[in-house]
Amino acid sequence: MTITPLIAGNWKMNGLRSSLDEVAELAGLLTTGEAPRALVVICPPATILHTVASAGATSGILAGGQDCHTAVSGAHTGDLSASMLADAGAQYVIVGHSERRAAHGETDEVVRAKAEAAIGAGLKPIICVGETESERDAGNAEAVVASQITGSIPDAAGQHEVIVAYEPIWAIGTGRTPSCEEIGQMHNAIRRQLVERFGEKGASTRILYGGSMKPMNAREILDIENVNGGLVGGASLLAKDFYTIISAV
Ligand code: PGA
Image (cartoon, rainbow, N blue to C red; front, side, top):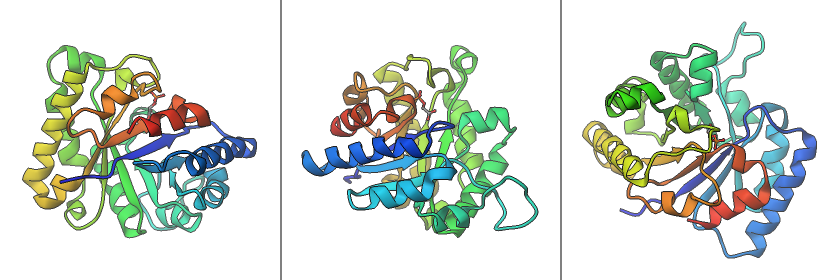
C-alpha cells in the first residue's frame, strides 16, 4: 500500500502577519521546484490561520489548527471550536500535542473528544502521542504509546481519516532524536495496533514522526518503514529549512 507522505509544520506560539513572507517564499519554492512528493500542511497560530490558508491555496499548502475545543460552541472564553478552524480555512488540526497535555492537563479522554470534535467539523485530526525520557529509560516507551493510542484515537477513525504523530517528548525542541531503529520499532508497533483495531483503515493511516526533525536528519527518518511524514516544529518556521525537509521525501 502506498501512502502519500504528509509534512506538517507546527508553528506553535510563533508567527505574526509578517511571517506570511515565509509562506510566500515556501509557496514560491514549491511551485518552481520539482513537484513535492508529500502533502504540505502549515499549522500557524489561529490569528493568521485564515491568511495562511488563503496565501497557501494556489501552491497546494494546506492549513491546520494547533488545538480545538471538544464542544461545538458555547461559553468557553478564549477557546476555538473545530468548526471555527474549518471556517478559517483549516483542513487539519493538531490535538493532544505533548505541550498541551503537559501545560493544560489534557488527558487521553480529552484528546479523544477533541479528535471527535475535529472529525465532526470535517477536519482531519493529527493526534499526538509520545513517551517521556524516563518512560523510555524504564523500557516502557511502547506500552505508554500503546495506551495513549488506545485512549486518544476515537472509534470514528474506522470511517474517517485521522493522522497519528509519534513525538517522543524528550526529542521535542532538544535537537535529540531516537535512533532510526528505535523510531522504526515504535512506528511498526503503532501500525500493528492500528491494523488490529481498524483493519484496512489502520493500514492506510499516516503515522508521522515528530521531534527535532531537521533538514539534516529528515531524509534518514523519512526513509524508515511506516514513517509516513513528519510533524516539524522549529524547522518549519523558515521556508528554506521546511522546504528542504519536504524535498527529503
Ligand atoms: P520540534 O517540535 O521539531 O521543534 O522538535 C516538534 C513538535 O513539537 O511538533
